[in-house]
Length: 278
Image 1: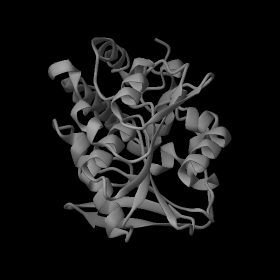
Image 2: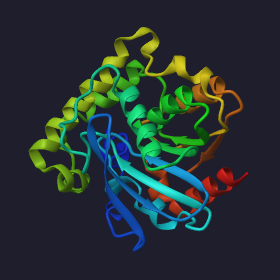
Image 3: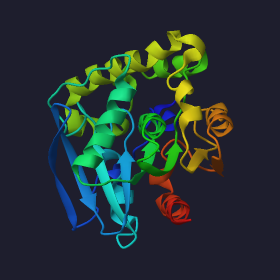
Image 4: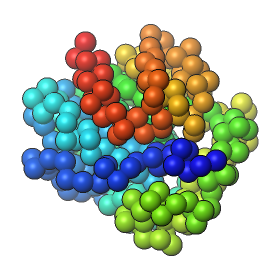
C-alpha cells in the first residue's frame, strides 16, 4: 500500500504541519506522574481544549494548524507531547498493554497541573483512542470530545495494514522526514517498529479490543469525524464508535484522508469550533 496514501496512523502529517503557528504560545514542561511532559498553550478563552496527537506524534508534528487558527478569544488550546514522544523525552517510549490508559492519565493530570478543572478533548488517531479512555474514566472533567482516525479495536485487516508499513526504510524520504527531524533516523525506525508491536498486541485480545469496554461509560457530547478516503481506518471503526457512545454523532468528509485536520484545516477547525460552542 502506498505510504503517501496510508498516512501511517497520523503520518500523513505533511510538511505544512511543521511550521511556526503563533507568536503568543507559552511552552514548557510540567512534572506529571514521574515524567516531565512538554506542552504548548495559546489563547485566552474560557473553554479549555486539549489536543492529543497520533502515534509518535507531538505538538510540533500534528497540530500546527489548530494551535495557529482555533479561536484565541473563545478557547484556550493546549498541545502536549505524550511521554516518550517529541520533547517529553526522557523517558524512552515503551508500549505496555496499558499504554493508552497511561497516556490518558498523563493527559488528564497534565491539564489538572495546568489549572484546568474542566476541558474538552480533540484526539487524532492514537490520540483519539487516548481521548476515548480519558473521557470514559473522567466524566466529571470532560466537557466535549472530538475524535477522528480512531478505533476501539484491532481487526485482522488492521493488523495487516500495520505490518505493511512496519519497515520505514521502504517509506519515501518525504514521509520519513517529519519524524526523522524529531527523533533521528535510527531512533525513529526502532520506535516505529515498537509501536507496530504495541498496537498489534490488541489483536490477541477478545474481539481485538483496545477500549471497547470504555465506550458505554462516555457521557460527554462526542463528535466523530471520518475521512471517507482514509485508507488506514475503515468506516466500520467510526460506525462502531457511533453505535456504542451514547448520544454521539458522526460527520463525514468525502475527500478526507487520515490527516484531514491538516489537509482541510479551515473546514475542520470551523466544524470543531461550532461543535464545541453548541
